[in-house]
Length: 101
Image (cartoon, rainbow, N blue to C red; front, side):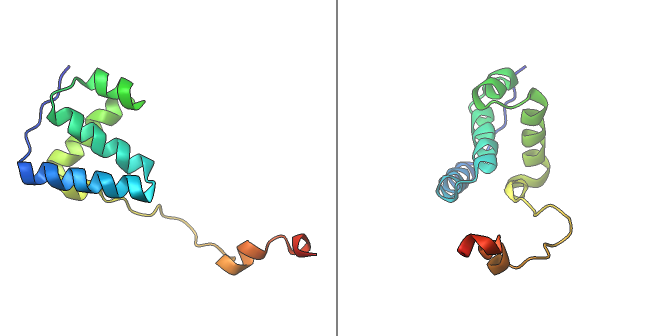
């Protein structure tokens, strides 16, 4: 099954710019997500995109549908919810205490 979405040239430019930022920041998940969208813009099939990027077909569909529903805002990831750490960054760096002996 092939997914075809049409984006304006400005939107594609923004995607490519975000892709470069993701590569620079070493954000593999975002890199795969943007590549998925760019492959869909080129008209690649869901199966091909999933195989190329090592994703499931459902994941490819989810990425594309999120783009359709939320636009470029779908590329923003939020921090997962959970308890905040008890140790400070300095405490983590200095742990274990006997390592500095």
